[in-house]
Length: 187
Image: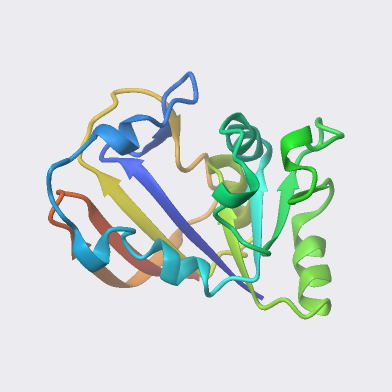
């Protein structure tokens, strides 16, 4: 099963503030620029290529905090699995859209693949790091937002082995965001 990352960070590598704030994603860069056909920076094309999303507990809780109405739900019918060893129930506002999983992520991927799924979107710093440690990520897309936060929650945690990134492709958007795509090879 192919596992991909598609995420935004500050230039100094943070995915959220210490308080889990992500409002800087909406307030950074050139705000008055019309991105035209690139307005979603490739997200809709990417999300249409996946058949499941695997996210960490923190991502699930952040998603729940948005209190999205059914017509605002951005993921359609894509299967969403939230990883957590501590949370035992999905927040009420997500019960129809998210399932919980606690256990070995390699076994999860095997089970998802056996059920016919082919491409997973992996989201959340700790979750991405866990998948990298297990050598399960195939490609990474990072959109750098033109801001230095100075502190916050890092995209990557400690990884005990080197990971080679190759076949880089970069796109510079008119709003000063820069998106870099890599293929992942494990040494």
